[in-house]
Structures are given as structure tokens and as C-alpha cells.
Image (tube, rainbow, N blue to C red; front, side, top):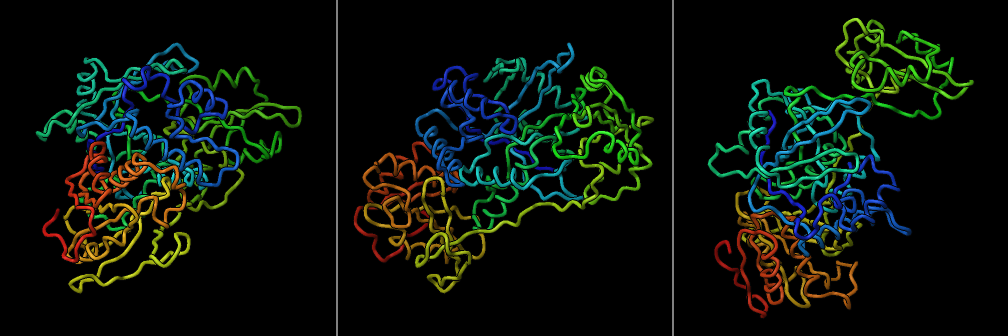
Amino acid sequence: MPLIRPFRALRYRQEAVGDLRLVVSPPYDVISPEQQQTLLRRDPRNVVRLDLPAVEPGDAPDDRYRRAARTLASWRSDGTLHKDPQPSVYAYEQTYRVPGTAAERTQRGFFARLRLEPFGPESGVRPHERTLAPAREDRYRLLRATGVNTSPVVGLFEDRTGESPALLNGIATAPPDADVVDDDGVAHRMWRVPDDGTGDGTALALAAVAGRGPITIADGHHRYETALRYRDERRMSRSCEEDPAFDYLLALLLDSTSEPLTVLPTHRVVRGAVAGASLLRDAVTLFRVDANVTRDRLVQEFTGLDGGGRGRFGLWWKADGGGGAILDARAEAFEKVERPGGSAARGLRGSQGGRRDATEVDVFPSQAAYRPGHQPSRVVTRMPETTPESILARTQQPAAGGRPVRKDEIELGDRGLYIESWLPERRSRRKPLLFVHGELAGSWLWERFLGYFAGRGWEGHALNLRNHFWSQTADPTELSFETYTQDVVAAMDRLGPNTVAIGHGMGALLVMKAAERMPISESSTCSGRSPTRRAPRGGR
């Protein structure tokens, strides 16, 4: 069964941005370059700057993702974005007109965090489509740079009891926390539903209903697979956080039974394919072909909601004088098609009894085997005598007390920073420690303490500020106290709210300032003198 939980959302502060309509955008994968520029001209704080960072002349491959991460950090620092104080789910309502019809529909669901699971027969999360390597890589680089989900995966659940519609209808009687009509005339409303801490409030009730059965991904397969890769990479650092944020991703969950689903035709332009009469000759092996179809008939047949679910395609081509046809899948022919990963194709039903619709444009004539494109994750670690680019291996380090610990690195690539980590080989429930050095120092200042704590089950991390030689992206003449504060905020955010922060000298001031912006468990400060050889007592 899927695990669904409330979370603390990072949201626009309405007092800072004013009209929310100016800062929302369509999903990243439907935005044209022209629309992207329109959104940025509308307001430079539009979310498209995070979710679809623009490529600029002279950019290296990761530059646009680093810009998105710097923008995110800046917006968090200046108050454009804020994190809600309590874990919550977020009820959502969308009212829209069905394209090509006069019908208006309203659907409701809620945002929550969904625990990541690999796909498989026993998984609580199910896919329904294939993914492409370039799109996965794009979303991975953005997630790795920012450390946040900039858009949700959309999942469907079944609630035949009617509990979730009743709960959502009750929530929708209150004034919404956000109310926006987008450029397409679609109305969006959102309500924050805090977890009241009693264990039986509305937030947990919604999560429980949606978690009674599998979640089917309706949109966001690339983001889901990317999040799995990112989770596996982060797990290799052996974070001691009991319930780490990277084990989850942002999901919009919709009940598929309370309202009829709106499933529109999928239209594709295919370039370089076999065209015209040749295409139809190949098609008859799998489809009943209705040839010589006019343009007007195609528009009529594939507009609106009627006629779906029968494995049906409309074709229009320009070659050989142009023409049109309608293809209906022959179920008996598809039963013979063996396509690894293609159960949807094999399950097609013809017009006499159909239950499924096919939207794959490569059903014929290609019979190439499908190989999932999942790329194995890796963690890049670094030791002091090497450069960040050259080390791909882990090593064992002796710890105080003789117990082995593992030395590793966490890269905050968007800020040109590295966190040096000393990690116990066996995880514990102890809170992670973040050490922040002062002027003209580095993680070496804390090395004896990092080994000491890691040998006793603590996870220790030392942030190398931008004046350290490993951090090669900053001009020292342009650094300020605020720059350093933002760096510490980014490190706290990466390690999570259970972090205990320890600062020395200027690092102590940075810890106190950053703790005003980022929730952490505890903090401790040391004087400007170099720490003595005696390790501090306790967990502070």
C-alpha cells in the first residue's frame, strides 16, 4: 500500500507577490519558448524560472539548473517564498470547460507527499507509460540542483466509499488560501489543511483514504523515476534522519471514481514515417481501416469526449496528395503481438467491447523490443587530496575509539559548496550535526570532532564556506555576510529540520542568523578561539 503523509509546503507569500496569477504557469512540458518569455515578462518571480529555467548564451550544461537553485535560495531569503509552519495536506479544486464541448467539470483532490517505491507487482505506485532518457536527465539535474519538487506527480486512487469527496466538499465550503484563474480560463482553488496532531484529523483522514490501494501515475512518470534515482543517490550518504524528505515526492492525488474522468484524444505529429497508401497497407495487419476520410469527419470523430476507449486512431498525412483514415484496433491481432513492457497494446479491445485506448504511435510497423531506460544511480565522493571531478570511490577512515566511519561529500552544486561528511557505518537515530567554521578556516577545523562523533554513531557534516579552496565558483571580493548566511541556510535545508548546528567564531553568528530562516532542532556556538582537543560532551 502507498504511504501518504502531510508535509510543509514551500509557497509564494501573497504579501510579497500580490496577484498570484502573475506567478503561476502551465506544466513545464507544454510551455513553448515564446510562452516562457511571456511568463517571465509578466513577473520575474514567475515559477517558470524555477520549473523550466531558460538556457542563456554560453551556458555550460548545468548552468541553467544552478541558476534555478540560486533563484530559489534568493526567493527564500527575501521572503518571496515561505515554508508553512505545520505539516499539512493541500486540498485542490480545478474547474474547467471540456475542450470542444459546452460541458463544465470540477475535480477535487489534494497535494501530499508520497513515499517513493520502485515499480513492480507488489508496489503501491503503478506506472502506465514509458519514459525518455533526455526528459529524465533534465528533471534529475533540476532536482539535484534545487533539492525540491518544483511540480507534482499526478496520481489516481480509487475511493468507492465516498469518504474523500465528502471530506473535500466540506473543505471547499471555506474561503480558499489561493484562488487563481489561468490563461486558459481554468479556475484553481487551494486550501491548506494542517495536521492537527491528534492522529484523526481531516488531513490524515484524506491520506488514509487515498492510501488504501495502489496509486496509478496519471502524469509525471519522468519526475517519479527521477525522484527514485535521486533518493537512491542520497541514501548512499547514509543520512541518519529517521524519515528523510528525499524518500518522498510531491503528489497531487485525485479520486478516479467520484467524477467521470476527462480523457481527451492524444494528438501527435509523426515526422519521417511511412506515409499515405503504404502506411495503410501495413496497418491492415492490426487494424480495420476506414480509408478516404475527410478532414471534417476526422475533426468530428476526435473532438470532445465521445468515441474513446476503443483503441482508435485517426490519421492525416500530407504526402502523396494528402488524405485521411480511421483505424480501429483488431483485438485478435493484438493478442499475437509480443511486446515486452507493452501489456497495454496486447490488452487492446476492438469496437465490439472495448475497455482500453491505445495512444502509442509506434504500435506498427515497428516491433523493436522496449528496454527500460533507467540509469543506475551513483554517488560522487571526494577526499581532501583530490579534486571534486576526479573521485568516484568511497573509502574507510579510522575513527576515534577504533570504530570505522565512512568519509563522504555532499555537493551543493548550485552554490559551489561542499559539505564534508563523517558517517557511521551503522545508522542510528541520533540527529545529524552540522559544523560551520569561522574566518580563514575550513572543515579541517572540525576533523577531530567529526571522527569522534561518527565513531559513536553521530552523523557529522562540516560546511566549507566560499572562502575555502574547494569552493571555486565565488569571487572573494563579492562575498558578504548575507552570502554566507544563504550558504548555511542551504546546508540546513539539505540536511533537514532535525539538524543540530554548531558554529565557531563567525560561523556561530552565521548559525544564529540562518536559524531565524530555517527550522532546525538545536544550535550551539563556540568562541572565536580554535576549539581545544577535548571533544564536547553530549549531543550539543
